[in-house]
Image 1 (cartoon, helix red, strand yellow):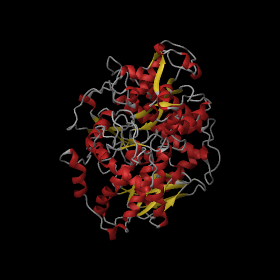
Image 2 (image 1 turned 180 degrees about the horizontal axis):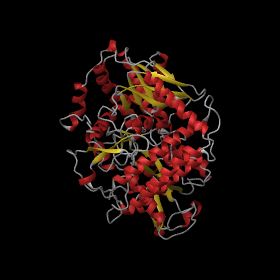
Image 3 (image 1 turned 90 degrees about the vertical axis):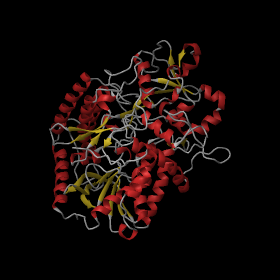
Image 4 (image 1 turned 135 degrees about the horizontal axis):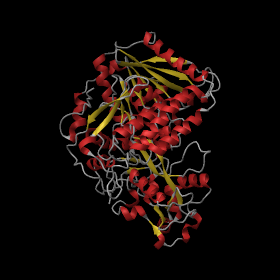
Length: 640
């Protein structure tokens, strides 16, 4: 299939402006004749639902939490990027565009990334108007700090809880529209299928997580804003409820899946402490503004934080500062993560051996403990509560962990998938970050998609089909989809095997982390594929899901999600096998520079993968969207 990205012609800086003018419009009186479904109410979903309702559309919004406020966007800590250049340090829209393209190792579309940088400046104005309490300097101006992959300070923040404050802003806008009757909110509802009629998305099938009732909902368009799939690794920084079910079910109905192997490993996470853990905890990248990353120059097994002060400076290796003097500790996440792994592989890890130090001693001496507490207090408190150690008195121990997924449903410039009428926003699409996302850009993309892109682009499709082109839920396709959902639920409950859902999930996660994690190679990926195929076969014959379908049943919820994770995991492995180059977070050991950096192959792999589902048990078909670079030169990434 030939993929049409719908990137507008013309100069880069004019593409979005011209495209908005060329899009068809729906006049205000007609907007109230259209129905829109929004699945997910994080930053992308809440902002999209509120914005579309404000325009006059009738919106149904769904989330599986008990409130939109509990969406995982709330967990984002460090900040949101915007090219405001308030620091007068050389930032610009073009520099943010360039940093993002380079940070993603030249595996994203120029047009999409420039638009993201362009609308970033509007995000800050929008959120300030909503009352988001961004940090401010002494004179009252908004403050900025630095994040990885940039040499300017463009990140706006609210201490270490930026995601929470931004979500409260979007949530207030959403609540206003709920009160106005323009948004109908469905909480504790999980989407289990998308309904496609005549090739167009016509609605969704949901299950009430309290009563177990399966229901159908129709609309003119469906927007998926359901986040990423990093929980395929079992242990990640995502909330336990984060899952891939909505996008995976859409994929199996015809939506292509873009770059599934592009996953991000975050370098500053609290290390794994034992098999009892169900998730990992992120320590914000913002800490690398003032914290210095180091290990001892010689192996010192079991070195503890409280003993770090006894190590002379001459015996410490500040390895990021040594290897990347231009960026130091603020190199991009994939670079920092691989270097931390390398130090531990050399036997120089601290604590358990799978950790490095993040040390604030110099910053506290330079700025004072009160200043550090004002910047990072809640993060330091979180670390102390989890580890029992005081990061003001000794360095933190950190180690890389799975954090974000750059892959997702393939979308065009309008954020529409390969199913007409089905859109994907935020982390659940593949569009803006290439092979590695820069820090503080996830919040930027989610809000850009919801507030400033989708309100324009959906009008073009809706004006084309007209308001009479709607299928009601009494159509046979809705009954067929509901029957399929009920059949799957009943099958999961009927197996009565001997292994729990969590056992299968943990086995999958260990396999993915070992063979499709920070480092990958052909032999390991082929081994992982066989393991996952065997795991899938065993899951459908030996999983034990207790309880019934007509009640609150979290084991049943998890079972459906893990079944989807297993299938997605196999596709991730296929994608990693097919892309034998290294780029960004996708590191093939066979393709690296003499210095151990990711080595791209632009002649063969300057494309976005778009995988097409062909049926259960059938190999998926790889489609390629060629990436064209007219404004940046493809070079070997260097942060030295």
